[in-house]
Amino acid sequence: MKKIVITLCISLFVTGCESLRFAPSQVQKQNAWLHNRTASVTAETARAESTSEKLQALSRLGETQSRAFVAYFGLPKELPQADTAEEILAESNWQIANAAIQSGAARPDGWQLADSVLELGIGIFALLGGVYGTQTVRFLRNARTKSKALQEIIAGNELFKKQNESSATAFKQAHNNQSSQTRQLVVQVKARNSMNQGAREKMV
Image (cartoon, helix red, strand yellow):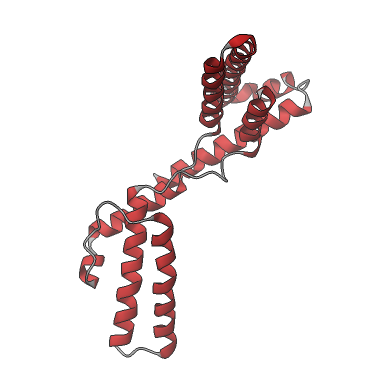
């Protein structure tokens, strides 16, 4: 079990959380339902205004495809007003669409997930008790402490380099003796943090 928990934590650090998603939020469910209503009204409008056969076919297909989004996300607790084109085009629905983009871009943090896995392991083995359980709890608590320490060290190092650009070269040289595994882990953590920061800045 120790090996399983540690392997899972390491995989979270190394592979990141891009494959993980939060459960659909209410705003995402509202947006999916509004998308279906928008596609449906568009198809009705295209037919009523006698547009080209191609445009009518495309709008019908879009309406059919949008049903899959509602089926996947589920219905929201509150349905926005969307019976007519005017209601669909309300400013509040534009706000829902933009909020859904931000919500959909959110990803779980690898550090938090690893900490949660370790906390779960500690809880399970504490319940099991016995000599083996006690030893495993101690082992997992140490792993959790080391995980937090690694996160703080990397964050501190990056802050130091930003605030002391003239010392960046010397700083890198001081870390030349790191093992390839350590280098790989640090690079991946830094890259993931940089990507997350960039995504947050774009959303703002």
